[in-house]
Length: 484
Image (tube, rainbow, N blue to C red; front, side, top):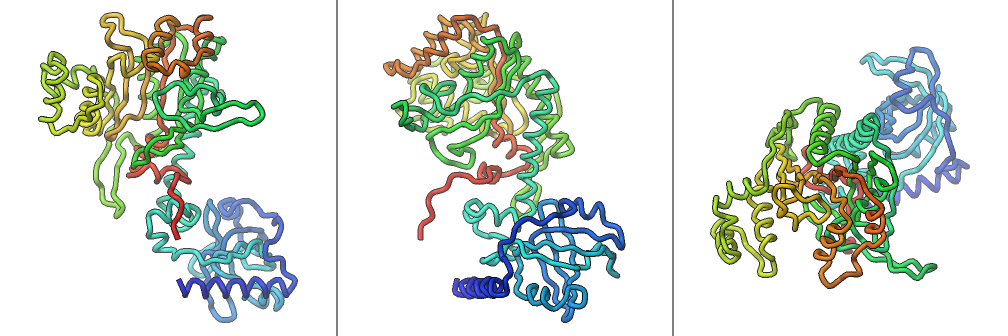
C-alpha cells in the first residue's frame, strides 16, 4: 500500500508538471483514422495515420522508445524518437505513464521484426492516469476486486473481456433471430403498481408527484399479454427484472430476461423455438454444439452436448425415477419421510406440492447437465399456464434445464379470464390487493391462445461461456458496501 501511495504521489507530480508546461492533461477530442483495428487495416508503409488509445507498454531504448497503444479492438505499436517529435513534445512524453491516454500522428513503417508501427510526428495527451494499473500478467487476483473494479478486470483479463464480448454477441444475435421470424421488440414498464408475472419479493419505491407506492417489476409478462389482446401476434422484450431475494452463484437481484409471446402457438412450439435459438447462439458464440466448460486454470471439466433433438420428459415420470414409482400414491407425511430418506431436508413450512418440487430441484434439476425439457408440471407451480385437457391437475408447460439450473420456462398461456382470476386469488391468499385487475380486465376483452417463453440471459451466458458464477457474466453485479 505504501509503494502504491508513492506511485500515486509521483503521478500527481507529473500531472502538475504537465499543467505547468501549459499541457492540458485531460485534453479534448482527437480525430483518428478509426479504432486501432481499423488503423491496422488501413496500414500501408509511408502512409500517415492518426490513432488514439491507452499506453499499455513502454520499452525504453535510450534515445528512442517503443510504446503500445490499446483500445477494445486491438494494439498498435508506436515509435517515439526525439528527432522526429522534437524536444518540447519529448519533454511531455517523459511525463507520461502506463495507463495514460494519448493521440499520435505518425508515418507507417514495419520494424525488423515485422511489427506494423507508427513513427510519431506529433503527440497529444488525452487523459492522465493517476493510479497505476494492475500488472498485465497477474491482473486482479482478488475475486471481489474483479467484480467491484470491473474496468480493471476488463483491462487486464482477456478471458473476462471475451466473456462480455460473447454476451454482447448473444443479445445481438437473439434480436436478429427473433426479428427474422416476425417478432416485434417492445418495451413495457419497469415501475408497476402491482408486481405480477411471477412469485417473487419485489423492490418497493414511491412516486412523490402522484403519491403512489410502486414496485420495480419482477417480470414483464402481464404487460406483454396485454399486447396480445391489442392485436400484436408476436412480441418479445429483453427486459431487466428486479427481485428482492437472496444473492448466490446463480442469483443476482437485478437480472436480464428474454420474454416472448406468440399468438396461436403452444408450449411445444415454443420449446422448438427455444431449442433452435440456443443452438443457433451456440454455433455463433462457441462455433459448435459441444460447449467446453473449463476451470480457472483452463482445465477441461465438462463438455455440454447441445446436439438436437433435446430430451423431453414429464415432471411426474422424472419424480418417480428419483423418488420411487409410488411417490404420488404416498400420503403427505410419507412423502416428507421419503424425502428425508433420500437425503433431502424438508422445511416444516413447505406445503405438500412444495415438498415434491423441492425434491425435484435437488434430485433432478441440480443433477441434469445436458438439455432436458420437463413438461406437464403441477398447476400449483404455474398459475399463468393453461390446464392440460387430459389431466386438469397439470398445466401445459415446459421447464428447460441445462447445466443443473432452469434456463427457460415456456407455457401454453392461460387465456380464460375466469380461471385466471381464480388461480391468482388462490396464489394471493388473503392479500387480494396483489391481484392485477387491469390485467384481468384486458383478458376479459379476449386474448388469443398463445405460447410464451422466458429465457434467462445471465444463465444462458454462463452456459455458453462456462462461467461458474452469475457475477462473472454481469458487468456490475450487486455487492455489499466495501468495508474499510
